[in-house]
Amino acid sequence: MKIKNHVFKFLFFIFIFNTNTVFAEHISYCGFKRDTQDKYTFLQFLNAMKDNGHTYSLNQYPEKLTRPRQLLNFELEKSQCDVFSGGANLEYSARFLRVDIPLTRGLLGYRYFMVNNEQLENLASLSTLKEFKENLMIGSNTAKLKNDIFNYNNFNIMKSASGRAWLMLEGQRFNAIQRSIVGDISKREKSRPESSIYRNLMVYYHADLFFYVNKNRKDLHEILFNGLEKSYENNSFMKTFDNHPDIKQALNLLNNFEEKNIYLIQNPYLDADFHNISAKYWIPQKIKNSIKIKFNKESH
Image 1 (cartoon, rainbow, N blue to C red):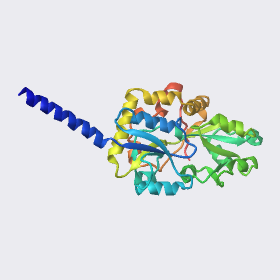
Image 2 (cartoon, rainbow, N blue to C red; image 1 turned 120 degrees about the vertical axis):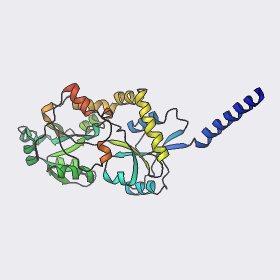
Image 3 (cartoon, rainbow, N blue to C red; image 1 turned 45 degrees about the vertical axis):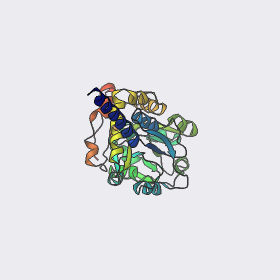
Image 4 (cartoon, rainbow, N blue to C red; image 1 turned 60 degrees about the vertical axis):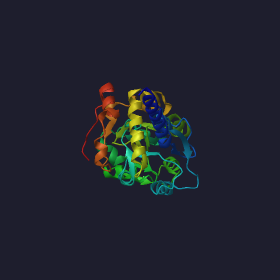
């Protein structure tokens, strides 16, 4: 009997070992040429993948591939990587599986405005959302979703060719550019001394960055979701969030805006699942409690 028990334990150990070996795989995160190992979304990917038995890496897209081609390859399972990060929109929801834990906790939805210094005096007296909509001509690149959101909320948008928005702002073709608070804000300010942050206005709409996987990879979706949940439990997610320079700059800018100048606008381009994401993963409610931001809800 003892011999049989030992044999059973040995075979069980071999089964478990082989099971882990069979199902372990190498999972790669899709990055761009400029992405490095300290990119915020990649660090959160590492947190999600930690201690789950799989290997992982950052795999950069070939430079020659356009974004639409990259997404098509990903959809057709011809991509060289398994996970990418992107914003929430109806197209992505239809084509891919979204891991519904927001990576910037809602910060991506805060947009501030850079204005030409020569226009600051003219814009200084504006104080209502109606006045902003009537007097701001906002330059924007070809990012369709952002333009659609601002158009839906009745802002005046002028599209510019990629990379030319700043030149057009300097030439006063329009008087403002909208930017996300997530990113290297100090670098933008230093590189454009003829422009300044417009302190009279910031807007917030529901948006964020998420991980996406192929529709056929429900197993990988589960790995990432469980991994992110675990990273919340062991505090590695929040440690990365609190200490990454891009996030720290974003929070600093947000906290230095007067609450009366932050306006909530609508984003109608979200699926139902987005609105069901647990409140514990979002920072707007937390920020409102801590610095008492009261969103203005003027009608448009």
